[in-house]
Structure formats: C-alpha cells, structure tokens
Image 1 (cartoon, one colour):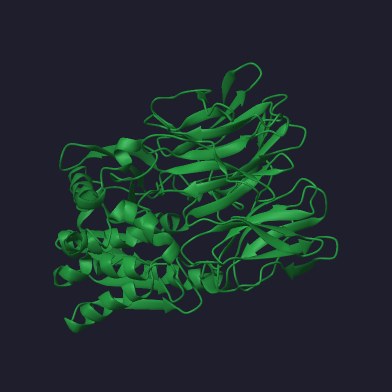
Image 2: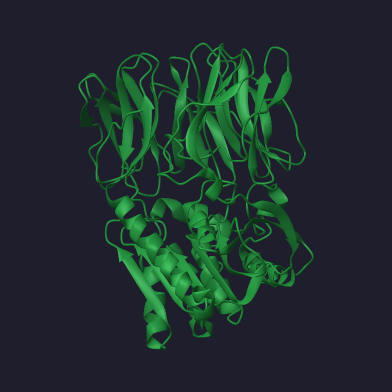
Length: 562
C-alpha cells in the first residue's frame, strides 16, 4: 500500500476513474472546507488543479463511465447555495447544468445521460432527483414524501428503471428499499423495527445490495440478494463500526464482477482498515493492516454497552470504557459526541484509548438527540428541549458514582463541536458536578454561532437549533456565554482559526469572559486548522495538552504517587 499524495493540507476524498489511471481528490487549505478538486495521473504521478475559485466549495460527484468528464457541486454562484456542474477532463471546459437556491449535491450518473442529485432540506430530510446530463428540462423528484424522511442513495438498477436506497420514509428506522422511477413507489426490501440501515451500495450488475445496520452502536453487515429476495446477515466481523474515512461520500464499493464488496471497518481495538466480503463463498477477511505503531491490540480497551436512567426515567445508552487493569471507582472522563445528529459508535477513538491507558474510566453516552435510535429519539432535544440532553449528563455521572464506576469529585467532561457546547452547558448547569472540562471547537453562544457560521449551513442548523428570527430569547436562556460566571471548574479550550462551521469567535468570547472574572481557562488556537484538528503535529500537541490537563485536574497527588 503506497501513499499517493504528500501535501501540508488534508486530502478529504478521492475517487478512481473507471477507464484510466486517473483519480480525482479534494483538498481544503488550512481546514477551511473550501474544497478544491485535483486530478492525479497515477502513471506520471502528476497532479493538476481542476477548480479555480479558491474562495468557494467544490464537492466531487463522480466520473462518467467513459472517464472523459466529471460532475460536482459548488457554491461559486452564491455562497448560500450549491449548483451542479459538468467538467470535461479532456477539453477542460465546464458547464453549470443546474442552478437552484438549495443545498444540492451531485451523487452520480444514472446511465450515460442523466445524473442523480441530492437536495438537503435539513440534516435529517432530503430528496433525490433525476437530472438530464445536458441540463435541459427540470429535474424530476424521485422521493416525494410527507413528513421527515432521509434517502441514502445506493445505486441505480441496470435497466435504469429504479434506484436503490436506505430510507426511513414512513418508518421509525431506516431500511433498504427500491424506488420505481415511473411510479415513485417505494418498496422495502427488508425491515428491522429496531435498527438503522445505512451505507447501502448496489453491485454493478444489480445482483446484490450490501448495507449495514447500526445495532447498539456497532455495525452489522447485510447483503440482500435481489434475485432471490433473501437478506443475509454476514458473520465474521469483530466488534466495530463501518465508518470513515468516507471517500467522497462513499463508504464502500463492489468489484465490477459483483463478487467482492470492500468497505472500511474499525473498532475499539483495531484501527480503520479495508475489509472484503466474497459473495461466492460468503467469507469475509481483512485486506489491509495499518500499523498500530507497536501498540499491542490487547492493550486497547473495548467498551461494555449498557444504559442508565435519566432524570425522567428514560434509558440512555452509554459505552463504558474501563482500563484493562483497574479496580474500584476511577477518575472519569465523560466523552460527548458532536452533531448533535450523530452517534458515538464502537470505533477506534485515539482519545478514549489514551485516557484508559492512563487509568481513566471513559463514559461515552448517546444522549437524547443522537442518531442511531430512530426518529423519535433524535428529536428529543430539539429547540426548547435542548437542555434535556445536558440533564442526561448529570444523570449519567450520578449513576456512575452510585454504581461505583466513577470517583466522585474526579469527573471531567470533553467534547468537540456540538459536544463542545455540551461541555460548556454542563459546566454552567451543574458546576459542582465537574472537576474539569475540555471544549474543542464548541458553541458558546447560539446567536453569534448562527450569525457567523458559513452561510450555506445556517438554514440546515436552524432546523435543529431554532432560528434567529424566532428563537433569540431561547438562545439567550440556553447559551453558556450568558451563564459563564457559574463555571468554576478548570477549562481547556481548543479551536482552529479557519473554522467555517463554528467560527473561532465562539472560543474567544468565552475565554475572554472567563479571564475577566478570574476563572482558570487555558486556550490553544491553531492558525492552520478549521473545524477539528487534522494535521498530525497539531493533533499530537492537542492530545498531549488534553492528557496533561486531565492528569492535573482529575488525579490527586496521592493517586499519581500510587
């Protein structure tokens, strides 16, 4: 396995051409998320830039089957909206084939002459459209629906008369389905009333539909045989999840002969690698073996999966990571995921492994509002119910202390992005509960966050958080910046100067206020990072700082001596 690109900035996706030695990759300078597209010729190992406007975003779609042109979306016309473009790799000419004031994304080709495009209505609701490749005529909606529904495109049938998706339309959970293009009828292929289907991929010949189910934070591989109508659960994977690094929006791929299905898989004790399922004999095996840098697998902690009762008796899932050799109540880090429309899964989490290796218990909850548990669960923290998820954290700590898992008075909390808001909110709502907090790229003030976040994101985030027009009074009540005097625990804040999602002003306003009232706050600002810390040298610095911070604040001198 050879590295193909060597840049200071991150490469955020890549796709191979079906008919040549070319690949397209995306790169965003300084973590700005202003993705630019590049074409790399593998024979010559020469790269050339395909897009010209460095101030705007370009999201790659796919290669045409002839390999001569690509499709992508961009907000070049207006920062708020994404249009669809076709570009020739031979003549280097391009054409905008679809313009609309929406968040559109080119997904792929439907036969030689049409495109499948996606329109995001919210983060949890979208539509798929069929668009002529020459841009003539209006696109045809394939997913007309009532209420909230999300459609994850998996592929088009060989005769181009239907598309395969995973969808939660008219259901609590997502399932694999096929949509007849002529009638719009949606037919479920398999249904599980208690787990989410995701990551669907149709084989080139339309023989198999592979997808995953999220079962209690872990991924189970399923393969649906379209001819026989049989759905098969594939055994042989360790505890883990099928997620990231996602390549240009795709989690997996079938071989051209429909025999092999390859996907990225990771788990608490094994880092991300490529695995392959063989449709002929049903076997599954690991194909790549990325180094663990000398760390033995047995040194890595795997979680127990359980639930705790919250303030209203709701059972909330939590992953409990305990050091391999430990006893009694332990100093604890509560690790809160971002999103909020996201989920903490059983994945390879460097931070969690660092903490358990240093003797900390780690509690990683999926508080109300997380994905993976159906539509009802994901909306339990919407708008005026925002702080209910923060109250879950209070219940978690009290449960962990009662169960003699956590050492009372030695509990810290950390999170990134929306998880950073959860940290700040937890410190203001329950100041006596926490011994320390780490906020990475978090929201301190919902008003300034929505005012300053990238323009293309605002309407998507307002669907979750509430709007500037209607909900300013609510934002004042729940934003940590307005209760900053209640923060008494030491706080470490980390942020990237180029963050387009949660601008760095969110960090700096709360750092300024805390310093003004004499609180303990430490601040690390990375000038060459965006929303999250991507570069290895910066990650090393950030992770070391977090580890040292929790060692100082959560572990007493007598404990350190022991």
